Image (cartoon, rainbow, N blue to C red; front, side, top):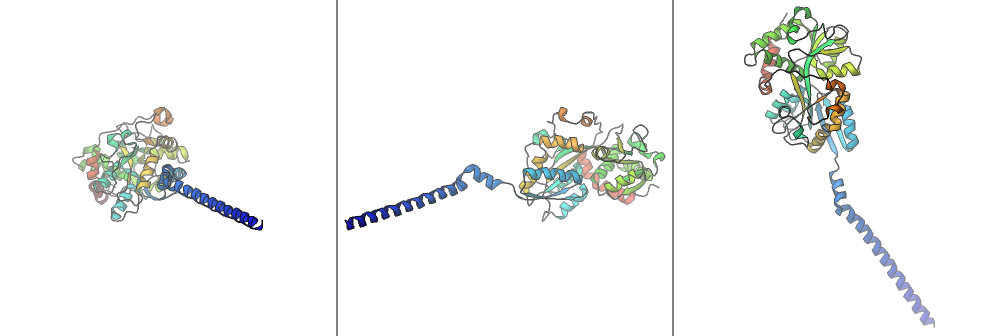
Length: 368
């Protein structure tokens, strides 16, 4: 009997050990299965592997407040991407990209004139690719090889201090600016560092005779005679115009509308009767960018229809996308009549540097 009890106890002990081992084996298998789920589940693996992260460095000529607003929204969608931006003029961006060609520090160029972007593309500074929205951009508003894309249209117009002038008694066309009545009334943003001003001045040469710039140089000399000052940057221009140190300037329509409707600056515009040069303001991914995929993500985000419409409503942008429902756009946009004159943008891009160098060396400050 005693032996039987011992044997029974021994058998129970063996069964208990086997059960415990079986439980441990089951638990190990479950853990392995969980681990396998993490590494073999296609959806989970793809999300983990492709979740955007890292950095994105932007060189931009756009309004800083607008830039920060868009970046904040971008980070809501892609919170793991750290975005840095540096603000400067379009021409300064081009020169910086040239200097950094061997070791690019920027990933994305946001806010460049058509002329500057063409030069950047020709100098192999810009990355060629095909974003999802490519077919919605007119051929005249993008690079044929996908190295830059127009984001918005910028009519270049006559800017006035609305406390001093009205749309009716201000200069009605470009040639009116040469009238002696406007002497010392014209303030101009420093030309060479500004893509906007370089475009306006170059287009004035084209308007006279693109094949013989002498007539255009003479026109700019007469404008110089009426120009009181070339300001260092846009903020200085806005301040001096507000202080009534001048009553007239030349600038892009978007910035004028932005200041008119969102600040207390007394600004308005006159759309020239003969038409305005309509600048294509665009974007580009930098060639050999360190954060190439993040730059592409930002481009796609920037051109989403919802973002395009929002930027039109909040920042008075005229989009290049041709598939935006006009009814969804703000009232000021629906009332626009964008009259222009013919400009060979490739020719102007080729000649701009030469023309602006001549203006700086032979015309600036010599009209008096």
